[in-house]
Image 1 (cartoon, each protein chain N blue to C red):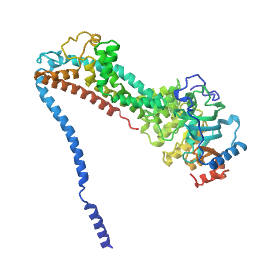
Image 2: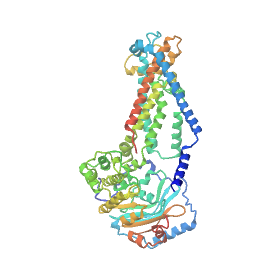
Image 3: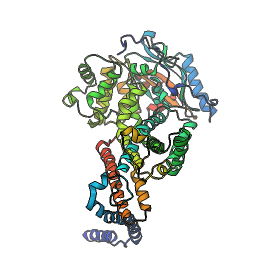
Image 4: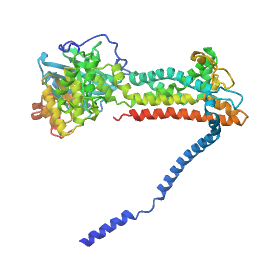
Length: 304
Length: 314
């Protein structure tokens, strides 16, 4: 008896241990890892190049660089106007696109009936989010600059970017609302809450982390957007940006990415370093914003 | 809450009806009958029920609900056909039947919860203390305030235990002693002793059985007249289930309870009156018979009922 048991154990042990090396999964795993390394590698090289090129600027005149206006002289040029322009534009986007986008999403998800028309609208909002940014630039040029006669002012740029991120805000908000279980709505309606009371007291608070994250990311998108602004008047020549916020909003403007775009085109080598430094500032700010989004998401993430 | 002392007045304040309340009558509703035979049988039973009078009938002042040939549709699909039954006051009425026979749909039409489904609509009438719940101008919010609901899966708000109970009274405009109301609701739901020291903790941190009793406390905090329970114990273990059943027997002194259950032992143990529904080949549910729970389980009048309760079907 003991002999049989032993040999049976041995047989099983042999089968369990004696597997052939699974080359195929080894190769697949290796290929996937390689893809990751390439993606990260390219990014790292890019960042390292920017850091090295930008180092002298930050080393010699970091504060001066951040607080000086645009200039044709590389040793005196700075990006303060770009910082102000980008921040004001992002502010306009936040004020215009967030309420409209969040409102539209609440209507679509919580009030609209599931009709063919509404499904069509939903699909098209998704498509709008995929429309190339330059198309929004043309739209802004036609609508805000020309038809509404604003001219190439900061407000026109801000409104153009607001339209650009609107579909993204609607989509991310919709997704956050859909993620709130139907059982929560039923619970609230079941004790006699109205639809709005249900949304205000339960659906919106529980969807808030998702909405915050999505909207912050869409603001980061607006912050880094360049192409449409080139069409609606962001410039990089020397201009005086003075006066209060109202004057700023209604006058010529520039933004961080616009400055980078123009400096990259200048013949002088010094501007390459300045451009790299501006990129570093832009990346740093966007990283900060995205970090805030991730922090908020983790902080308020809800398990059902 | 709002004049809860007088259940006979359903408030008909002209609140604009929510968008999704217009009946969805795109296209004619064609009853697709895959088997004429089966439907004939259903018709016969329905006719018999009509002819003999509804087996259980109650004095008008003992009635809470009276269904008059109620049919429920989702789009062109008929989920419930021609159900006529009566729900007596301060009793536990169980709706039993095989999966998909429309029990939950029927229950959710009792407090207009089905209004939330875009394609849902009904034919026939549901009288609540004599008032047609689906008549023009009846406010579904007020209906749900009087006819509370406990759902299959415990669904406490991810808020504190206190806020879970207090939400209903708050939206109803309750201006009294909220602490007292929360305590009495939790006491009536047999949960107070377990949670009195942690009212600020999240309701979702409780066990499944406690969550369901919290949901019952939440439902009774608005002083409803009726509590609808949609398989309230299907997600609970046997001990938690027994606690809920015990609680139901206690609650029926003050409330009328209608419970949908898959669990025949539960119906037999806990209910006073039982309605057995099944479905025809076109998947529309219909009422086979309704009688005192004892009669249903000891001497069912119909073969279908007998087959079901003895486990030969369903």
